Image (cartoon, rainbow, N blue to C red; front, side, top):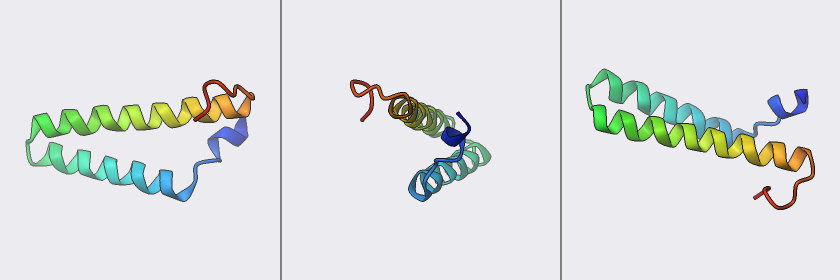
Length: 65
């Protein structure tokens, strides 16, 4: 299970960090609708990646994309 934590590739890391920075900037400048959209996108992106990695790790071909 430890391998799942360390298997984030560079592209995923760049996207996640970029979304966090965009979220912090949108909160700083008071754009609440943009903050909400970025936060929900970030949660969906991270959740989708985690689900796919777990499915691949356990060999579930139906749920791995």
